[in-house]
Length: 401
Image (cartoon, rainbow, N blue to C red; front, side, top):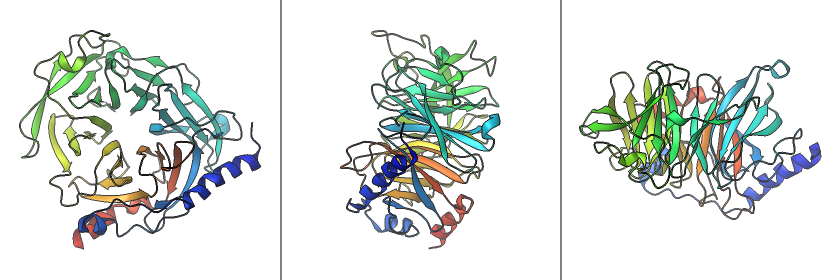
C-alpha cells in the first residue's frame, strides 16, 4: 500500500507528462473556432476549460487510486456515475463508479469524503467482458453493460456491500448504455453495432425485475422532418446464446439506430446518441414521440462529432462525450445548440467517457479512456469544478455573437 508521499508523487507525474505533449486541436472551420472561443488555453493537465473552472486528476490506470487501498485503477475507464454516500462514517461524501472496457472488464469505484478527498477505492464487478457504459438506477445501483455479442447487463452495488448479478430481462446483446424511466416503469437500452436497435424493458412489478419484458422499437416517420413515433414489439427470445438469432434480427419491423451509445433520463425525456450518423435523439416517454435535436450534417453549430457517453445536469443541459472528434465534452440545449465545455489536448488516440455529476451539480467526473497519445499507461480520470450553473449563458452568447 503506497504512503501519502508516493501517492502524490505518482499523480504529479501524470500532470507533468501532460506538459511534454504538443498541443493538438482538430478544430476546422470558423463555426468551431467561434464555439470554442470561450475556452481558456490548456492548463497543466492539457485541459481547456471555461473561465472559473479548474481540474485535477483523481485516478490513473495502473496506479493506486487511494492511500487506503492497494486497488489499482483499471485500464480504459468508460461509462460512470456518481452516488451519494450516506454511510455513518462518511456523511456528505460520494462515490464515482467507472466501467472497464477491456476483455477483463468489470467496474471500479472511488470513494470521496465531504471535502472531495479520495479516501477509498475498490472493485464492484469482476469476471465480465468489455464493460462499456450502463446506467444509474433510482434505487442507487449501477447497471453495467457488456459490449460483446450476447453480452449481459449486470447490476452492481456502488457501496460494495452486495454481490453483482446479471439481469436477464434486459436482454443479451451488444450492450452500450441504459436509462431508467421511473414514471412509466421502463428501462431503455442502446445497442452498439452499426445495424443496432433501440430497446426497452417494461417492468410491471417496478422496481423489481420480475416479469420484465424486452421490447424493440419501430420508428414511423422522418425524425429530421419533424417528430416521428415509436411503436414497440416484444422480442421473442431476449436471451439468445450463440449461434441463436441475435435480438436485433428477431423482429422484422425493428428500426435501425446506427451505433447506439450513451443514454440518460431527465424530466420525462430520454436522450441518447448514435455514433454512425452523429445524432442526439430526444424521446418523450409519455407519448413516444421521437426527434433528432442534434445532427452533425445539418447543425448550425457542428462542433460535436464522434458522439458517445451522455449525461444531463440538474438544469437539463445535455453533456456529450466525444470518441475522437475534437476530444471534447460538449453541452447541448433542447434547441440543439452545441458548446464545448472541456477540450483535451494531446489525447488524439483516446476517447472521452464516463461524464457524471455529483448531486449538487458542482463537480463533474470523466475519463480520457486511453490517456495521452504516448502514455505508457492508458486511462486518466479527472474531476472538474466550477460554476456549472452558468453554462446556460454560453448558449446565449453563442446565439448573439
